[in-house]
Image (tube, rainbow, N blue to C red; front, top):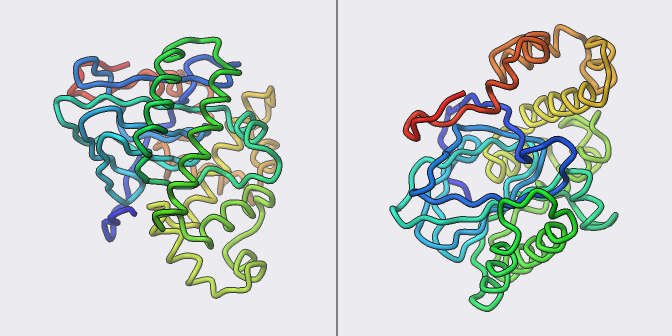
Length: 286
C-alpha cells in the first residue's frame, strides 16, 4: 500500500516506456552501477518492476513505497513514478507493453493493470528472472515479452489475492469502467457502482496516489498524444475527439501536467527533450 503524502502534487515528464515507436514489448534492466535513472515520469504503457536484488524507494503519484528483492510493483498507464533512492546492490527488471497489446495478451475479460506491490514465491521469482534475463534490452521480443507479461501479471494478481494486499475492488472497477467509458466522471462512476462518490475517491487516491479527477485528465492527455501520433493534424479536432470539453480545457491540462502548451509539446522538440531527460545525479540530460 502507498504511504500517501497529504497535500503533495508533483509534476512529471511524459516519457515513453518503449524505446522505439512500433514496438509492443520491452524489458529494461536497472542497477546502481549502470545508472540512467529517469526523473518522475509517466507513460501510456503499463509497467511491471521485479526487484532482483537490493531495495529501492519509489515515488508513486502522491505516495512513496519501498520494495526489496523478490517483490513486484505494477504501475498502471498514466501513473507517475520515480526511483527516489536505492541500496548499492539494487538490480531490477522493468517490463512494459503497449497498452493495446497488453489488453490483447491478457484477454478481453481481463481488468486493466492496477497498482500492485507484492512478494513473489522463490520458485516463481526464479522462473520470471530466468525468462527476463533471456530477453532484456532486446528490440524484437513481442511474443516472448507477451509471455513474460502474462506470467508476471498472473503471479502478481495471485499473490495479491493470497496476501490481501491487492488494489481495492472499487479502484479496480473504476479503472475498468473508465477504460471502457472514458466520458464517465466521478458521479457517473458512483451511480454505476452503486456507492457514494467519496468512497470511490478515497480508495482511488489511496491506491493510485492521485485523485480520480486528475487521473481522468491525464488519461485524456495520453489519448490526445496517441491520437496525434496516429496522424491527426488538427489539435482542436483531436481534443474534442478524446473528450476534452473545449480546447481551453485541453490547454489547461497540458499546462498543469507538462508545463507547456499542446502546440509547444508537439511542434517545438520539447517532447523529444523530455524523452531524453535523465536525473541530474546520473550526469545525463537531454
